[in-house]
Amino acid sequence: MRGISVQRFFDEKKDEFQLEALTESLASARPITVSDVNRPGLALAGFTGNFLADRIQILGETEMLFLETLEERERIRAIDRLFDHDLPCVIVAKGLEFPSYLVERGTRAGVPILRTPFSTTPFIHQLTEYLERVFAPRTHIHGSLVDVYGVGLLLTGESGIGKSECALDLVERGHRLVADDLVIVTRRRSELTGEASERLRDHMEIRGIGIIDVGRMFGIRAVARRKEISVEVRLKEWAGDVDYDRLGLEEKMTTVLGMKIPVVTIPIIPGKNITVLVEVVAMNHLLRVHGIRPAALLNDSLIHAMKRPEGSGE
Amino acid sequence: MTEQTVLVRNKLGIHVRPAERIAQTANRFVSKIALKNGECRVNAKSILGILALEAGLGTEVTVVADGPDEREASSAVAALFDAGFGEELGET
Image 1: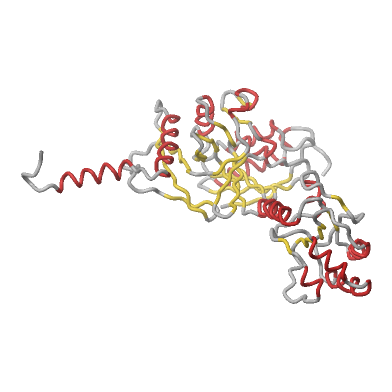
Image 2: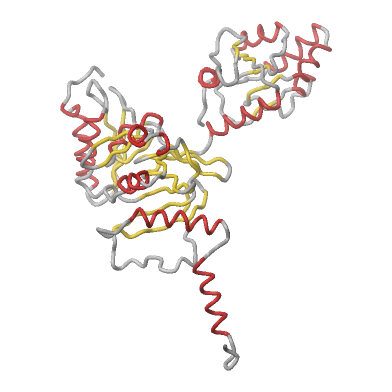
């Protein structure tokens, strides 16, 4: 199972969450492997059935107030109950004061303890969002991702078919490049998001010219960090025996990370302006989102007209 | 489908020049060729993809080829790795 170390979590998020390490060591025997977190109130109170030890444990005001109501011996026993389990990490929220035994026991158990000034509930939301992103299903796709009129278009096709050239042409027409050649796709709930690998961001390889930096060349308007993928546009060398969609009555779908998205196959013929076609794909998608399907509307009106009984025409 | 594991042997790792050589070689074949470094799997015909591997000296890379000329493709790519892309070799 994929997991991240507490040290990595701390390094990545210490500024945003203003994390403070209460234990000297951040080396945890157990990595963080799930995006859910747990408030261990019941475990502190004595019920450890179904205790979710694999999650980050969040101590908020309720837990701390409860610990304060206990006598020293009881408090130690309550904290021990927590650390009897193999925990990845404990985080004290709201910048709360904590019993010194907490850190002592955490150190002994090799469980890092952190503190954030953030209020408990908003902190849990943000933390979960971050962890969901970290643990989201992920794949690499060979293609280019461009934001065209706000629609994320994933251009795919064989090497050398002209994905990058098409993406560059789109950028030149005012659209925004997200990733070229390699798109890292993650799925969170029902949303597919694409982005470039961090190092390659804004770069493209154009055959005959080389590697270019689109951000520097075209400016900030020409690039975007990440984008939801709405439609896959497959560029395919024209083959006479393939039946391309001529009507657009049905939407063809493809599956990426278990999510269905529409796919449009565009035959490539030398001299054809692919960029305009790709823009039309984006606009067509927007119309569909607004419930407008030109082929279906045309067909309905045609069928309606043909139904008129003879002699009743104008 | 053929799979073989190769080692990055040149001192500088897979920087842009080795990436170009790999992509050029891969493009001579019709088979699909992928390179894998851990979770990262990229198309060997794409220079930027290869760079994303960030495969430094000593990295194990798996060459996965699939298609009619997969054997030739796989050994041609592996040969580049073995020769350290014609660059100075490092200690592995």
